Image (cartoon, rainbow, N blue to C red):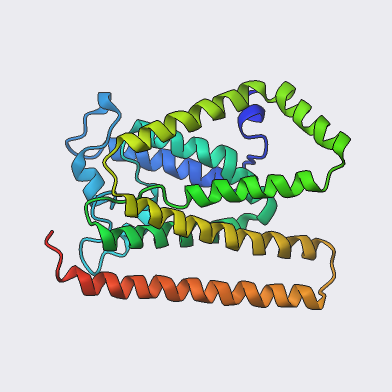
Length: 260
C-alpha cells in the first residue's frame, strides 16, 4: 500500500529501480570501509574522499570518480532524500520517456553538474545533481497531462489523489520541506547550487524531446515533424557532449592552479 502511495510507477525492470538498488548497496559497502563506525550509519571522511564525494577529481587519470560520486551519499539523511526523490519523481519521468533516455539524462546531467562544481570548488562534491530540474520536469509532465483532461476529469484526478494517495502525498510534502531545511543548513556555495540547477534544466529539455519522440513512435508514423524532432534531439545531445568536454578541459587547465 505504501509503495503505491509513494511511487506507483516504480517497476522492478526500470532504470530507477536498479539505480536505487545500486545506491543502497554502494552506501552500505561504504560503511564497511576502513575506519567507518557502523553505528553512526555515516561513511568516514576518507570514504567520501576516495569515492569522489569530496574532491570529485583528484588526479587526471581518475575519471571513474565522476561516476562513483553520483552514487556516494554523505550520510543517512542525504541517502534518504535522494532515494525518496528517485522513487517518486524519477520513476514518473522514466514512465514517460523510457529506460534508455532516463539513463542518458541521469549520467549526462549528473556528470555535468559535478564537473561544474569541481571547477568552482574542489571541496564540495555532488550537490543536488540534476534533482531540481528533474522535479521541475516531472511537474511539467503532470501539467501537460492535466491540460488534456476535461474539467470533470481534472476534478476526479485531484479527488483520486486526495483519497488514494493521502498518506503518500503527505509524506512527500513533509520530505520536501525537511530536505529544503537540510540543504539550507549546510555550508554550500550558492554558485554550486546554480550549477546543479543549470544542468537540471538540461534534464528538463532533454526529457521534453524524448517524451515527444516516444509519443510519436507510439503512433508508428515517421512524419517530417518527428524527423525534425529527432534532428533537434541529436543536435542537443551533441551540444551537451561538447559542453562536458569543454568542462573537462577547463577543469584540468585550472587544476594546475588549485592546491589540494
